[in-house]
Length: 68
Length: 68
DNA sequence: TTAAAATATCCCAATTTGGTATATTTGAAA
DNA sequence: TTTCAAATATACCAAATTGGGATATTTTAA
Image (cartoon, rainbow over all chains, first blue to last red; front, side, top):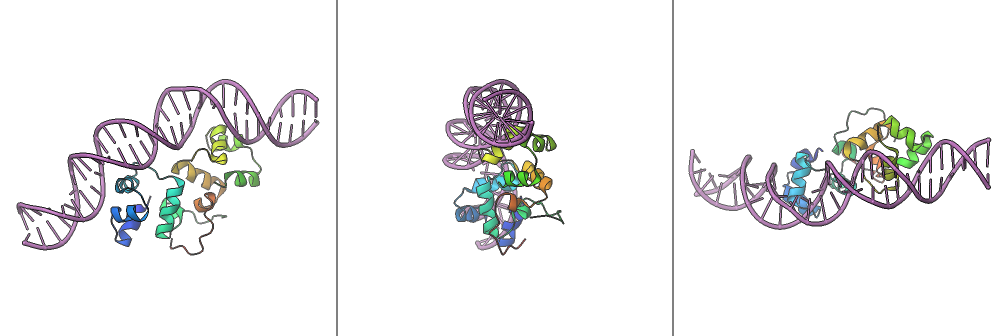
C-alpha cells in the first residue's frame, strides 16, 4: 500500500486521515506498516479519498497493457 | 468482484481457474459469491490473469477523474 | 431423465483483524 | 540539547474472516 506516501504528499497525520475516514489511528498505522490489510470497502474509501486508483494504491504500476 | 463475469467471458470453469492460480475451487466460488475476500496478493494474481485493473475487478468503474 | 460437470456450502481450525491501551519515535520550541 | 506534545507503532486479545476437505446442490449435455 502506498498509503504512507499518499498521506505524506497530502501533509496530514494518521489521526486526521483516520478521523476523515471514520477509522482508528492504529488501523491506519497497521495498513502503512503492512501488518494488516484493509478490506475492499476500506480500500475503495482510501482510493476515493486520495483520488487514486486501487492499482496505484496497491503498488501495481508495472502494467502497461490492460484490457479494462 | 467482477470475477464471475470475467471468468465467463473467458469461458473457463472455477476449477480450471483455480488450477491455473494454484488455488481451490471452493475458494474461487467464495470470491464469486462474495462470502470471502481475496487478499492483496491473490487480488493481483487474478487481475494479472485476466489482464484487468484491480479497480475494474472490484467494480470501481465510476471514477472519471483519477490522479494516479 | 440421468449422469457428470460445475458450483455452492457445511464444519471447523487457523489466521487475520481491529480496539484499547500503551510504548516508542519524531519534531519543534525553549 | 533538553523537553514535551504530537505522531506513529505495537502488545494483548476477543471477534471476525479465511480457506481446506468433504459434501450438497445445481446446471448442462446427451
